Length: 276
Ligand code: HEM
Image (cartoon, rainbow, N blue to C red):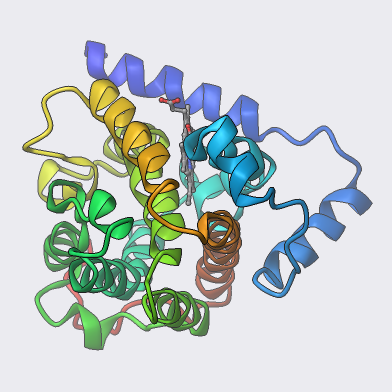
């Protein structure tokens, strides 16, 4: 086994360990039910803008979303992927449904690129819509949008991002945090596991490839600094926290929706799709 494969194997096993469920069946079923209904919960415990600035927006985001992050790692297709149980079809369905989300997010960030807070997070070097489209072309062909279904959970997530782009658009910062820091962090593990378990080549893993960023770790540090500064450019930094929590819940709901669609056979690409 090559060094890279050994590393990916170890990461996959670590993922399995993290995913292993020590809770009772009843607890697990209850969590799954609420995760499938994600997006309907009411946020509580969002600190005031003064408190957010005092602790730093990036710390506040990390602390407040930590329990949701743990749930996201264990949810639906993401859990299937880290346990080496996902198929190419499932991964393509996930990408197909994330594509309109990133498209809405990046259009929104560009629309607000001259606004004081949002401009700090309008960073084309992390934009992923084009990379995802490239991966989908490689997995399913150039007509992926017709061949692979847009699920209600994907449409709902994209609509929520579009809504966050209305007005001053500061809510977009919470959505950007959730997806881009995720892609730069755990996404790197997911990409390596996909290479090892599904044999996906680099042409289908552009989502995890940030060609113009030299060190992901130092970039993430700068991204967090920019988040902290953004909190001083808006009176509504509490909205950033609530949108980040909403974004996590929308992701969790989408991960389950993809898992369920594949399990029921309704998420397969139409027969002409290249796939294989
Ligand atoms: C199995 C899947 C995942 C693994 C193994 C994983 C792992 C990690 C790790 C190790 C970090 C810390 C990185 C660092 O501090 O530099 C991190 C951060 C993060 N992840 Fe994940 N993650 C996974 C899934 C997700 C998902 C599905 C999302 C969102 C949709 C997500 C969003 C984030 C965010 C926003 C951060 C930044 C936290 C912060 O420091 O503020 N992750 N992840």
